[in-house]
Length: 431
Image (cartoon, rainbow, N blue to C red; front, side, top):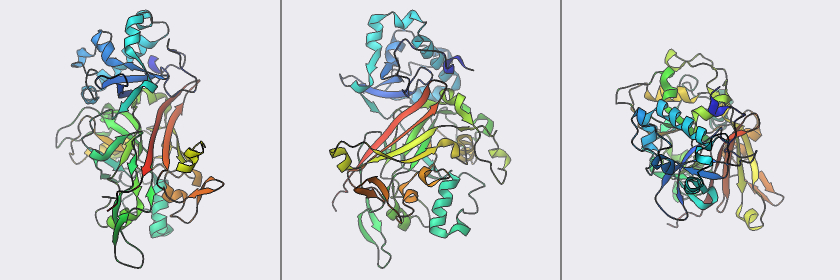
């Protein structure tokens, strides 16, 4: 076991046992202190942020041996991601060592500690990277089967190619926003069952419970990443809510697939949990039948046991100070196509990747109705209602609704979590 994931190590910074951010995690993010100043890179530890730019300026973090030029003194993580696995490992070891309870270097330097620690409540989280390209996959067999059953019937639920390759589409990176950003209900073309198309606000607004991964070292056009090297290019994971307008999507997706029904907003959590932090939670994914082609074959244990939840809070619930209602509980291990297969397939035609590119899983649904990862499935295409309170139900999202997703992997006496990704629905712009 890597010392940084040892369940027995502790930080001199007090961390609540239920925190998503113990010393075994150390996720990366970009923030601005409320007190002012430029954006800077930090890691979460308990309810605090450790400002890595301060430690870098003080010479306590040094990854120059692998070609770094002050990667933590920049407003995004792209430069750090570009350095690759050796630099990621070196930085994590140094940060973990400085935060350990038995290390005096930072613990006993009161002045430096005051400069380097920021309360999370006193900071504003930003997008952690400049995202150049965004791809969304469709890799949950349960989700694909549910949707296919609704629209094509149980005998034709999965398309012929689905079990042979990770299906995906290229999304819109410009509309990816960080958790806490309000989401505007989109306008678009809607097709009534008994008439011509009309233009107006989506009536079937949905969320999608997903996770995504950021890639590190880039590749050249024409270069593929072999399956055994994919983990060297995957930096870490975030929570993803790929908001979807189902009625716009239904009318437009033939023949080329998702467009305006998806591109209006995608929300991500601000903290990137590294693959190193998630290593203890690797597990087997679902059996794959038929056997994938050789370029997609990985060991069975390339999934991760990450518990996921989605909770909904209406405007009325917020006004009456009622807590959000959990409407879905799922797990990342349900994914049929794992992240290594997704990246290997994505680059198999020579498509190049760049540091900071984001690739999302697609909706993560489990085998039971309470583990479905979208309103489309939870309400089964609007045929049944989801109860929020004794007086409020939902089939799809309404204006004022706030959707919060969270996730964590449970360790021995600690948990490695992602925090949350939250977004509130605002009314459409009048047209």
